[in-house]
Length: 115
Length: 110
Picture 1: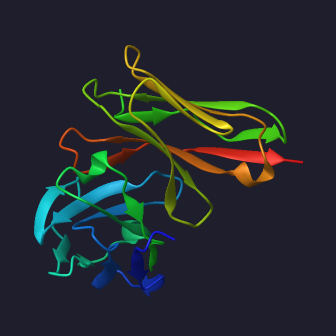
Picture 2 (picture 1 turned 90 degrees about the vertical axis):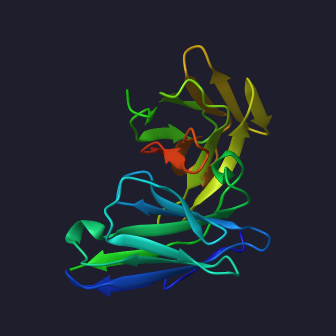
Picture 3 (picture 1 turned 60 degrees about the vertical axis):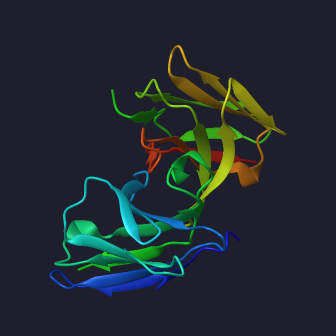
């Protein structure tokens, strides 16, 4: 086990609703990254938080937003849900600003279905 | 060229076979590379890191060719438990994000 936890494990929402997904990082890790994985695709980078500040963002619209807390846990918020938002949402924790060059540890993911 | 591109799958092989996956990447400045394994409906898990010309771990060998910008993963003596999707991964230039290929699915049968 990586020590990275995510909640909830599964979620069903309808179009237009808002959702909040949560992630607790591995002990000692101060960087959390969020990825979206659609069926049959590799994970796509949404954004990264380092010490409570956004430290990079992928090609996702502003309705995808996030937070990181002093204990380095993190939230992903998605507003105005669309059908295409249905995916597995993964968070990964690591150390440092350039954490992607080191090992990132993934949580089990939250599977979101938008109807 | 896509940032990270992998062999299309699926690969269906019998137990004991040797199978190789290839991956190409577009950023010539990349210094680190990874292979992740993802089981059905699970999170990706790091299989191997590749920082120089190659890396070997038991039945698994990863090789890097910087001149041609490709990485390969060789699996020898395939086991049923090797059935999974293998993701080729390269960090972006800033080191803030992992860029994943679409993955190659391996199915090992008895």
